[in-house]
Image (tube, rainbow, N blue to C red; front, side, top):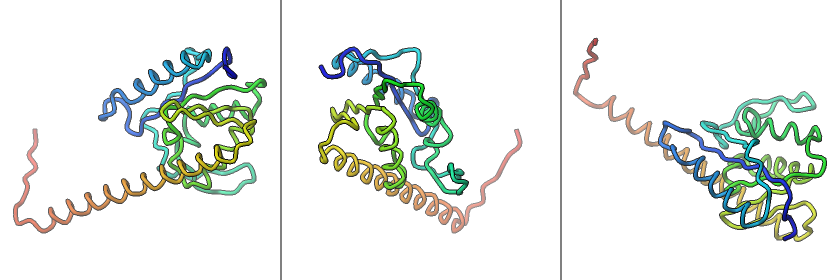
Length: 193
């Protein structure tokens, strides 16, 4: 009841995007958000949805920060619809704050935990209240419960570790296939069509 009637925006992300094996991922996330907002009494803005398809929350890109330093950051935090949203939040477009509803924190963060935490707390400190329907959590800067922040940190670490593991398994698989192809006696013909 605390947030009833307040405006909310949804965020959905899929690393591969539609047509690449994740046809229903962002649709599923959007449906979960819609159901959650109805349950919580939040007014979901259907005209402003943040959707990043084909954007990794783990893959690093080089960025220059506000002090001119070059660093790496997750692609979805620097080159995406989410990055555009963060820019307008910091510019003060939502002076009364806004609710951002995402399926789970790992949809937004797979980055190095310290960088993800910096981004996460920056959103909270700029008036964004983050809701995660799958675990029914609300991250609000006005909440002084230290367990809220501790739980978020644990999720940020777990999502990064999961992505690291997945990345290393994929690399191992590719290297194994290359090795098998190099060690095979069979020649493969390439035919012109």
